[in-house]
Image (cartoon, rainbow, N blue to C red):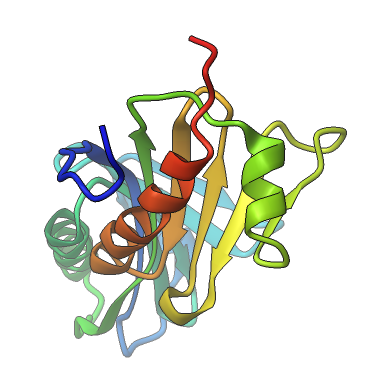
Length: 186
């Protein structure tokens, strides 16, 4: 098997974080008392609201800024954010769904081989770093994609990036580098 062969890797998106604004002030106490699936955190100044479908958790601030986490695709993140805005409208707020943006995507992928992390780090200095005393994975930062890849010796990788396309490109870019350092242990 050579590095230039096309290998189908399953990239599983585990979390999509998105942000949007309501363009109105939100009374957190009203949301906590009248809303459903709500946790009020007055010491932090926010309300957590959970939706079942799509399964997301939203952090709501009185300024109207809302951060949604837990979606497994960009489309699901937008649908969840819109449903949340609708819930707030039903509570009597004059919500306008604006400035929606996906800010972070977390994905996992498993290579079909183990990886020799010390060799990987030596081959890719200064971009790659490996501190086994601090973390079991080597860290590889791809500046032009704004993505970070955590590489484990088992062949499992965790990718964090600004959107799904960048995450997929990061996996594509790191595969040949990982293939060079594949370990003989199994």
